[in-house]
Amino acid sequence: MADVTLSDGKEITFNKKKIKRREWTRLFSVDQPVEEAEEIIGRFSQTSTEYIHELTLYDWHLLLRAARDVVARPIDPNLPSESISP
Image 1 (spheres, helix red, strand yellow):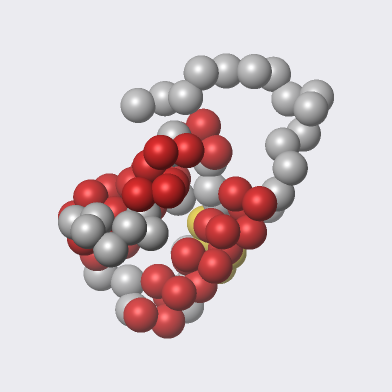
Image 2: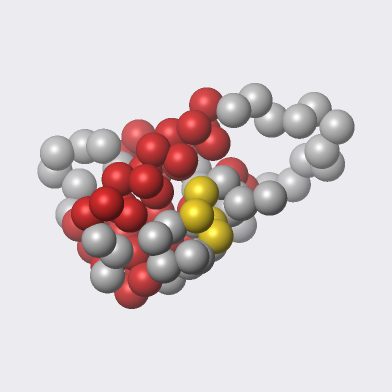
């Protein structure tokens, strides 16, 4: 099930195994380079940096709000433990 559907119909499912806590925190730093933020959110949303770069402000807002909700959601304790992919 998708975490958010953007205005172009693309369904986004975030993957917590694709982002590190430090990266999540840096996303909201005022000195975070835009390109780095787009790469991080692209990886987290399982899309591409280019796709993220071309989002409308409306979809960017939807994406970040959904990302925040996913990060706040508890992890299912029955899921197998795996390391974070680079």
